Image (cartoon, rainbow, N blue to C red; front, side, top):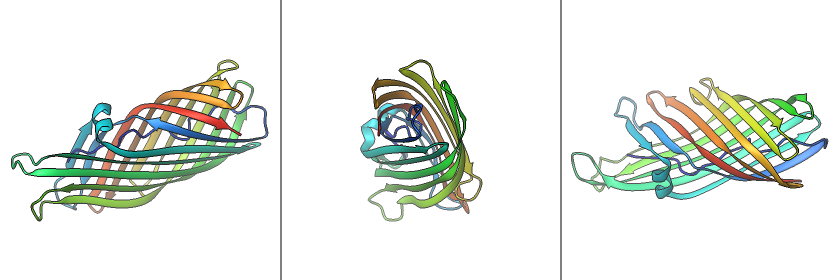
Length: 241
């Protein structure tokens, strides 16, 4: 089965350096155009289904997607939230048998992290955070022949630790970097994420962001599981209140 998580886009790091305000709230609808590669192990001890698709394939197969992130800051307290969901499907044939097969991949994740602004200057800020990321993943491959269908449906929650830095280049331009790592066997074996964006202040409370995101997850439950790596460009529009 060839799967992929399509245009999923950048998450909580599509925010911009906060001003001197003591309280800030931001909402960021965004897009993430990611290629995807990895394996699905539907049954313990059974074969792994490998998938590898570039951005063009992902966009062709995408059925639906929704992405939204938010940030709240009060003095040095920082709260980040992100929700992303996508569904994609593809038809093909079983190698060597010529049987028609339909594959479907659905995924959603919700991340919530809170932390402390350890550094706050006019040119740079640094935040340290801890939180949770909840996953719902369903992968299916169906054929007309009974007994040849395969699939995996799991949901789990990962603890994460994270760091974010905002660097102001001038009055309108800034650079943001974000990294997190988690899992630790509590949910997945390992999950990690890296995001970098360049941000432009178009208006007083309107910001545009562009960058790159890489997300990895490795989940195993007694031999069945999912391992995936998703990477691609991101675009976001931030509204500040």
